[in-house]
Image 1 (cartoon, rainbow, N blue to C red):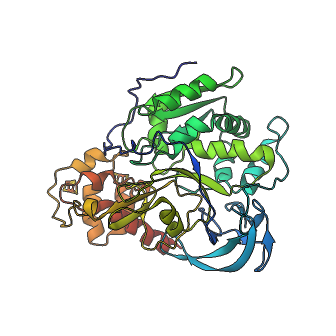
Image 2 (cartoon, rainbow, N blue to C red):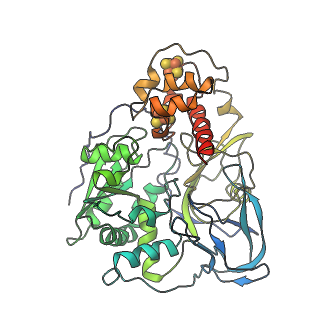
Length: 445
Ligand code: SF4
Ligand code: SF4
């Protein structure tokens, strides 16, 4: 099967930040060592925190269940290494909050063997059994959203899915995690698609890839077996092409309505690394205890793509790769949609797709002074979902959050940062919107 290598398909608006992927896109995935202590937050997904099933002082095997889901919108946690549970206590997390976490001290010289549970056979398992297995494996969206994958796959009464989209776009600058997964974990991806097709009931799958990864598109395209209804489609390089709604528009020409979900246009969209985990774990009944991340940026000496145990403290990860220059800013995720961390004591979590490190040289170039809005409308032309960031920015400054939501669809904003990126007045629009949404959510309870 041929992939479409010169795709022009895309969405309207968007921006073109420098890609900055050359430093790592040819680097094979390398295994990361165990840190002296791992910190596994019980809440590293959207939804209710998991409930610990181990106690302090207990010895565990690698892959053993540490915490079980607490309700449907919750997932399990597994031990990233064989070791001893030292403490169950509050620990800093990437969102700036303290969350209950399990401190695990790996045994000296602990190996990489992982314990297995009950395998789930894709041929014989029912859709509900696969959904349960995905939840028990602790799988969430590895593209950064950390939304429990099994929840996305539960098709509500009266709805149906005709197309499964596998998202291999990875439009965020610097990150090459999904790119390497698509080159090195092809069998896992194809197996994951088999599970996802069965559980979603979709008749076909499309793997969407940005046109800057033709090697991944060609490799996947060549590997698709004749019995699998999968096509590989290239889309234009543009940010935020990897956002679900943008990718659905580019591939299918369907518009997800305001306030709606992909399922409203008969689509479910799953990140490619998440798909690979489903294909890798379910046939063995394993839980997720490591993931691939890119560690890069001008402040990193040994840039690369690493298979890293979940719960590895950021400080340990950065010591291992070596820091260069005077580090001033560290992002979990990429610089557009990622989160700048205030503490290096936070752990790598399931939703951490990369770590990007900047030094004083780059941060010195970021304009600090904010000027008044000059009504240039660049932000309006950049917004991929046709919001009016200029107007919303003015309302945010005077605290008129309800008006932003009711009249300007604030809650549709998915914080891509395109508006801030183009603003010549350096107005931190996306920060305003994030804050406004947070305040409205809190008010709502
Ligand atoms: S951050 Fe929100 S308002 Fe700004 S461009 Fe992205 S979606 Fe539009
Ligand atoms: S890009 Fe900035 S200056 Fe221009 S209209 Fe938008 S908010 Fe105003």
